Image (cartoon, rainbow, N blue to C red; front, side):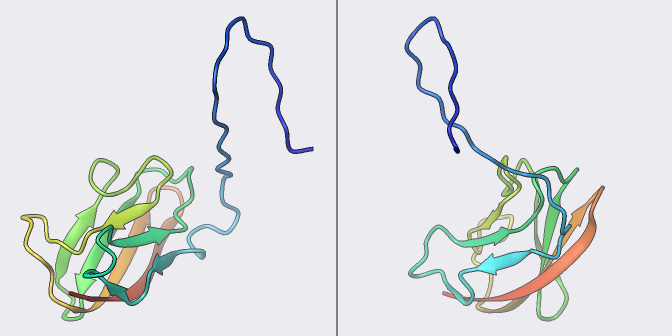
Amino acid sequence: GNYLSADVSHFSVYSIRVAAASDQGLSGLKAYPNPCDLRKVPTGLVISGIPVDAVSPSVHIYNEAGELVRTLSPDDGIDSLNTAHWNGKLKGGAKAASGLYMYLVKTSNYGKGSGKFFIVW
């Protein structure tokens, strides 16, 4: 198994990706690498586990004082498979301080989920 065939009228190259709907909701959220050394990981922190069928996902990132430092949305930091990417920078482009952060994921159909991570510059 695990193959797909199709009749086509011309040569084509296709990619098949599987992204199943979640049966665990937001309980599979994970931030990695954790801790995230942004001097060594220039691509930044990844927050995965948001179901691909989540409606209106957003990720709110708070510092340890509880201040909102960044909000990620599908147009800004969340890709088409609902994986969030944060480069450690504030909305204006300044670097966020090294330290402990909490994230809150909100969706219209799965509710809320949260976690924490540590970044270092």
